[in-house]
Image 1 (spheres, rainbow, N blue to C red):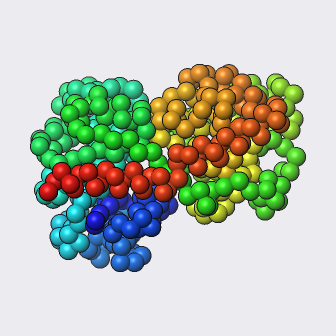
Image 2: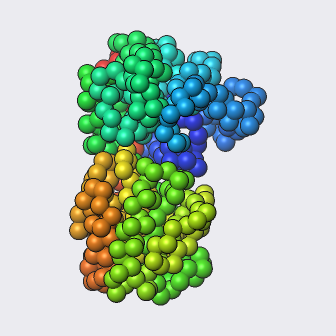
Length: 418
């Protein structure tokens, strides 16, 4: 079985790490797996770049060019997570050269693949949905507008009142291009699967749920004091961890709920010995007063160091407003660190309320604080939460489990395609 994965990156980003780990797990299971990424230096014969001499700077420029139509929407929300999908790279020659039995798309927008290309490949297709973009008019998360259930248009993320705006046009392009194609969706959470089933584009499609996985040999419990010494973190404090790409700047990740939550927590007896640790962001200008010490670790790309950070913490906060799954959550659980989240979206597949963490009422900073306190205030309880955290990952979120689920789906698709 020869599979070709398409993704905008390999390693580094959330989708890039997910594809890299899946690729290696499939190879370990005997699948001839290949990955094609745009303009990235070929790592080996199975991780390939698109056939061009474009530099990384030029690839970043293409990404920006794909975003140019957003300039016409002056009332859009700040930092909109929106991809118009109007330019792409020519990868047909590379697909023909590899000649895969099946193509697995992942995160392919932003100047890599546009909707019209997908139907032209004449191969069985799997699309691993890591956000909502595939079935919306361009947004990666819809902020609960739900217009993708019909046909988009007058997009609130773009601040648009035009029913025929770029979101409606992209939705129409997708609907026209994908009629009758052999496409199976693999979706990383029950919440995202429910969204796809309600969408006008995929309501009649085959939809399978396969959760993201974590490399449990890298992300694992470590001696807490030892890793704190390595990282220069306080040995005596309760460490409350929060992290994401653009951790303090992306409102979807929920940092705006952490300040009032920790201000609530600051009124408790634990406050004096509790500290916030943030990765994925440097300290913001005019950092809010949260009532306790805060340490900002900046961007962390090294997985060994990241695993140490999780293992050093006592609790990880994942207060996302919308989350397709929650890679930070499973990485934390794999390291034996309980997670406090809101009771929403993809995180409900990961966090077992009061078993490996706490799911707070949406979107209550007060209950978020209550969850943090509940995790921290009892050592025997924390030990049970920590044990179940690791156990949950070993039972459901390891790479061999994920690879086996993918192989079963691939084999079924190929059998039905012959």
